[in-house]
Amino acid sequence: MSEKFLEVSKMPPAEVFKLMLGFIGPRPIGWISTISKEGIFNLAPFSFFNMLGNNPPVLAFSPAISRDGKRKDSLINVQETKCFVHNVVTKDIAEVMNRTSEEFPRGVSEFEKVGLTSLPCKFIKAPRLKEAVINVECELNQIISLGDKPGNGQIVLGNVLAIHINDESVLDDKGLIDSKKLPLISRLGKNEYLDFLQTFELPHIR
Image 1 (cartoon, helix red, strand yellow):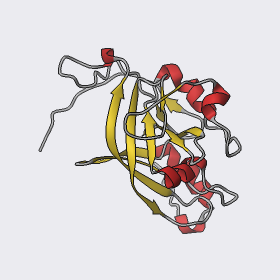
Image 2: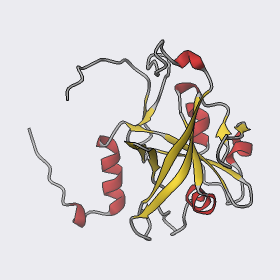
Image 3: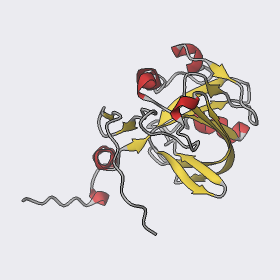
C-alpha cells in the first residue's frame, strides 16, 4: 500500500477544496430561500450545510466569497432581512435544485427562472418552496466570517422557528421521519450525488 502526504499550505486552495469534497461527505444539501430588502426571492443550494445544536435548534449554511470577491445573494439577503428557509431536497426535485445553482444577476429570482412555486412562511418574510416536502423557517442568529478573500466561508447560523411538513406520509406512527419514505440525496465530490440507497441501524450508546 502506497502513501501520499499533502502539505496543505503548499497547495493551491482550489486543489485542496476539490480533494476534500471527495472525502468530506456525503454532505446534506441546504436549499436556501431568502428575500432581499426589495422583496425579491432567491433560492440556492449549499452543500456546506448542517444542523448545529438543539436548544434552540440551529441550522447553518456557509456561502463562500466568490472568485471575483463578491458575496452571494443568499448572504446579502440574510444580512438585510435576518431570515432564511431550508427546503429539503429529495430525489424527485434534484434536477431542478441543480438548476438553481446557476449564478443569475442580482435581482433575478430563481423561483421565476426555473419555474418553482413560492409559499408564504408563518413567522418570517423569506418564502418557502411548495415543491419541497419539508420547509424549515429560520431567524438569523449570527453570521461568522472566516475572512474576506475569495473562497473564505461566511457561516450563517439560524434559529429554527417552524417546520412545515407538506406531506404527512413521510412520518411514522410516532410522528418522526420515516427515512424509507423520504428519498433524500446528498452531495459528494466532482459532479456526484448520493442517491437514496438503504438504511441500517446500530444500537444507541451513551
